[in-house]
Length: 397
Ligand code: MG
Image 1 (cartoon, rainbow, N blue to C red):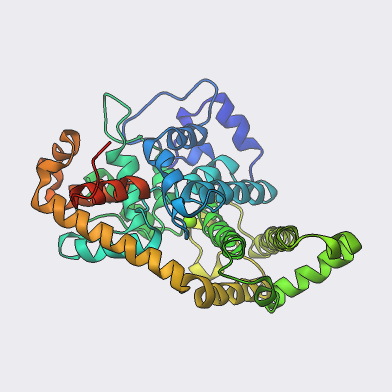
Image 2 (image 1 turned 90 degrees about the vertical axis):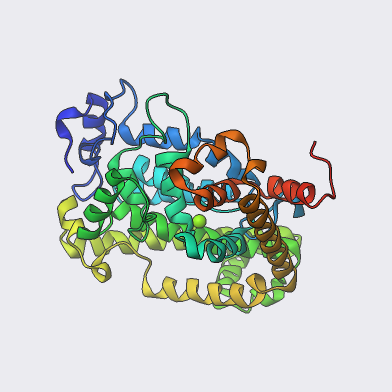
């Protein structure tokens, strides 16, 4: 996928400080529609900037992570979650001499295909779309950046580099009906393992959501600090906080204690990811990106240590049992599911109620894919507004 002849001096300088196993600008694979290099920004910086300036990215600010946006202003949304993932990804990528801009790009884009109302929204849309090719948020992210975003007169989508598109294909999948140019990338991806930056972003995603879901769950009062401290990693972090801050910690209010303990745990977890990965990379003997591509999944040398993997699993089981299945969270999910089912039924039966520019895509993409695109792109609040309006319970403002 080398494109080394067509890279700028800024990109060459950038590549010179990266490890041999990192994704270099010279390996970006070019763009499906060729473009001249930018005078001041590298290809991956441009990819990142195109994502940041996209409509889909802005809409993440009003999409549910776990808590419905309207429930409180301090809870994570898909947007703040993506920013936290990108912060962790940048820090870890830099420490491992990987490509920070590439990791940041993948982190910022990783949730762009999510529906409103979190995983309940995705599950509802997937079962409605089951007879029509299904719905999956990673496939939808690819569809957004290659087809749905409209910012250029010459082509649809953001025309990202092939390396970014391949890095975004988490399970190496795209929708069956996708363009031929993308099918080629799927075949390429199937022959190779993912770049280390893509593996890293996946791990950072999990680290970010486990920590912030604990914090949001505690803030919401769905979890209690006493229960959370029964988890060994939290108990250990709490003892460390006590040693580090002594009486100040003892006398602190509970919300400050929660944040102190979670901050220490997050920092330890990221440090462990960096240090364990650095050791494993050294031991693995990988030197080039081609070496990375040829690794079997279980030999990819980027991961937390076994000890921290156990700690993260313990937190995940706790959250599954106590937060993700909490009656108040389930109630939000049921409501989101109902809204999506109603909208899907209404737009499928009366496609003329969708905006003209959306209807126009039906000729190429078919009714159901277009309805799925329209609903999945909605924010929670817009979906609710449409639901109330179509049900005759509210005037559209
Ligand atoms: Mg995520």
